[in-house]
Amino acid sequence: MSIEAVLSRVSELQQALNPVVTQPTTTSLSGTGTTTGATTGSSDFSSVLSSQMASGVNGVAPTGGTAGQRMVALAQKEIGVHEEPMGSNDGPRIKEYRTATAGSGVGPWCAYFQSWLAKQAGAPLGEQGQGFGSVDALYAWAKRTGKAIDNTATTATPKAGDMVIFNEHIGLVESVDPNGTIHTIEGNSSDQVIRRTHGPREAIGYVNMN
Image (tube, rainbow, N blue to C red; front, side):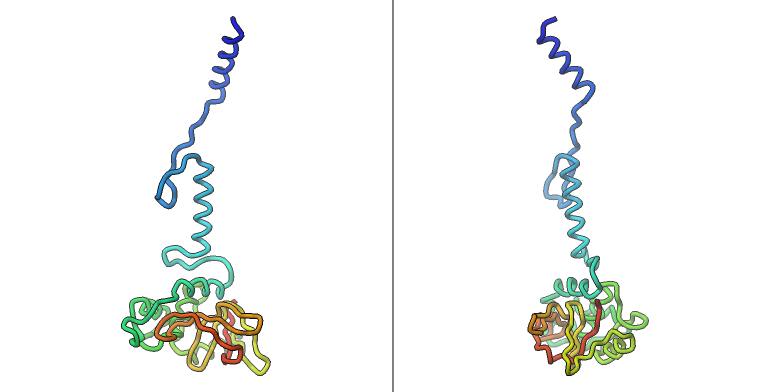
């Protein structure tokens, strides 16, 4: 038998003992194409799943972090929601915000918005999780439960995710500058969900959600 024949036979035996397995073609999670090979598909699935768990999918609240941090992530997605018609204190999305507060009705909705954020983040407001339509009632609850931080002469330092209390208005702290300037996301500000900036002395106090 020639050397060529021996090598050919060895190659045949190797293929018989170690067959090449063709990975199945799998549909990508996004549905925009296909990927070949289990390793690539698994990696793509894991990365997409992780991203969805962090940001929330189909209205489900994001996971991880504190309740306040989850509230900020949710609030950022609501920026631009506005009353329909403007000045009505109502609208399809605002009606959804009211569902987080027992006995709610059409009216000023800054506290409804915060109650909705907290409920979606897994930390509903109130002793029975009933939510609040009144800023004063919300802050009174925070004081009863040790969550209130008064903005006294020694200016309190809020954290992102704390609710910020003004005179008959409430927002959510998104970030704080080194000089104390507070950046917020507020519902029912100019009839919409919007970002605002405030000086460190403007707030009456804060509600710790972290």
